[in-house]
Amino acid sequence: MREILGRRRRLRFRRKGRPAQLDAALTYASAWRWPVLPGAGLTAAGASGTRGYGCACPDPDCAVPGAHPFDPGLLAATTDARMVRWWWGNRPTAPIVLATGDSAPCAVSLPAVAGARALVELDRMGMRLGPVVATPTRWSLLVSPYTLEQLGELLYAKDWVPSSLRFHGSGGYLVLPPSEAAGGQVRWERAPLPGSAAPWLPDVEAVVDALVEASTSAPDGGSRLAY
Image (cartoon, rainbow, N blue to C red; front, side, top):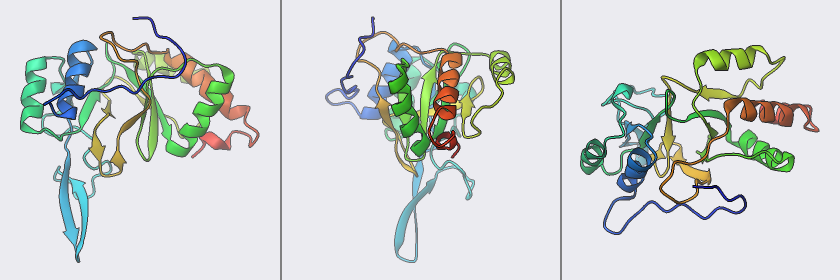
């Protein structure tokens, strides 16, 4: 499928009679061949008459409530549609976790406020981006698969890289829309184009180069990507 630049239509996963999470997970796994698994999910928690949500995992101080693998573990991620149907048939609201790396997409993430400003600057520069996943706290730019060796060489060659950047490569994970975590809804800031083919992804080198350039050329001296 050839990507047509310009305004993107909203990607609609849900089909009549099928939960949104299951429909999305089947698209990722079956159509795009992205290995996925259900995340830990959320559990209701309340105190002193207030109600909130905590992680369904046993850790009371979980750093990413709901938005991480637990049972099954990350190594269980699969593209098998039968397994996907079984998982989300039993847990229809479970977050969708992508196992990044190897042949699956990787990602570069940064804080949400910095991410919003960075995308404006990257658009101004004419940088072609792939899908962008947004949570209330962080935005993640999906990139083509890379190895740890490639990433190490890339970062070593740079005089400076914003400390706010995180890299989701082999052995990592990323929560995909339309999941929900304790921080709020996971959504597409830049949605993949509808269709059966897997979305186009830029190389990690291009994304990191563009983010560094956007940061260093900013009027505030680069601090816009430093938080």
